[in-house]
Length: 265
Image (cartoon, rainbow, N blue to C red; front, side, top):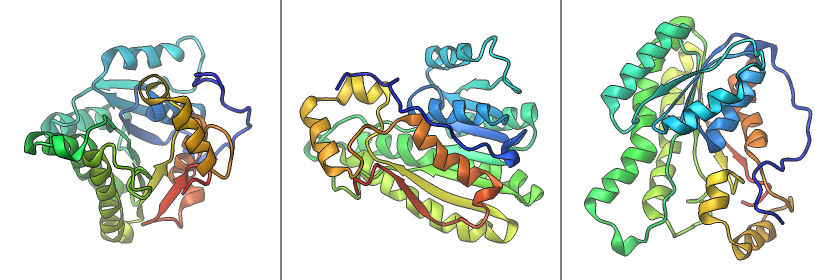
């Protein structure tokens, strides 16, 4: 099997009328799973903002939409999400530009490999700050507009890694397990205001980062052996669950985990 992240199976995906003109913010949206989510929301006619620290990747994603005539061109905001003050200021700018954000996709994360014995307190803090803390404070910034609108969907991107007991990045896996705590706690908090909070957990998704940094023939063979579906999973496919939860079609879903992993777990 070639090392190619673009070879997604051909599919005709659903269109969601309720996502037309809906305001969406995707963190970590410049590449990988996040870019796939951005592209799919743009295809739905949503008003999309995405935030990332990687300016080159962000501009490259914007260039994909140049001259294509989507209903709304997405907006890119450069920000280091570890900086909470900067993150919340970015969200304020995005809301001023687009109107109140009614869909937040907390996606930004880093799955750099490390072992338990090399962990330092500083790197522990870095892993939690990079993979968990900004989720809560992004929600804190968008929730007032959602509550005022009595309509909102927060989709937190988790990871199946802690469920699989994968041990090659303990700080990442432990942080990702905390995403479910955010989801279930805040779903109860915001439910009376018709604001939903869910988690979508990827398995092994064939992004450029995964294929260039972590892919091995042995690793892929093991993954496909574990999966019920014997092929790669791609960002555009993963994004479909996010779209469903953001749309009115997912209006009865909250406080839940949804696995998109080809039946691996």
